[in-house]
Image (cartoon, rainbow, N blue to C red; front, side, top):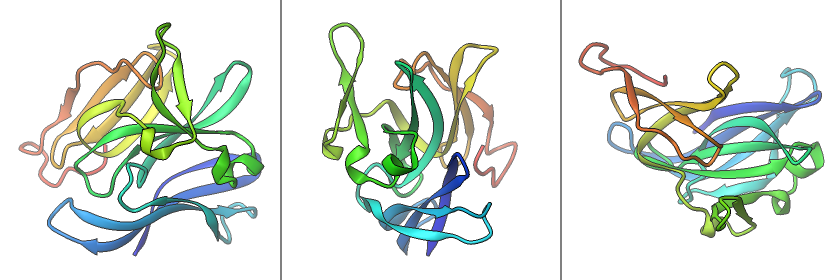
Length: 191
């Protein structure tokens, strides 16, 4: 099964990030073959799956939330990412916000921590990616709030819905605040 997890656009090209599910397990658990991108250049009328980039099914880059971020005068697409299932922690990758870069696996870099000055360290090594939000994270969404001047993340933990604020895309992220509980809203899904 191939399931879309998020989408974004670069000019007139629309990209859909999807995961290829290998096996469905217990509630909230599944194994993935890989995740990848499909693109449309006709406003979503037709879609072409891309051969690359692809992320391995056992990586932390199977389900994503994206946002365009301007850094140093350049635009990037940031991907906050979790592994297959609803029980992973969040990692972060980025790519320059151009069609050529988005379709080039070598253009992606992964957040691997900060230097002594608190500046982000980006690496081409997917395995060097570090966690930016710990805990049980599922169905995440991330956006910049101009009102709060903070990054806002919503997600579920296989039952309850939460929100938290981040100073930068990589954090620090505040403590989660419960938005809704599974006890009050059984079957709550994807905040």
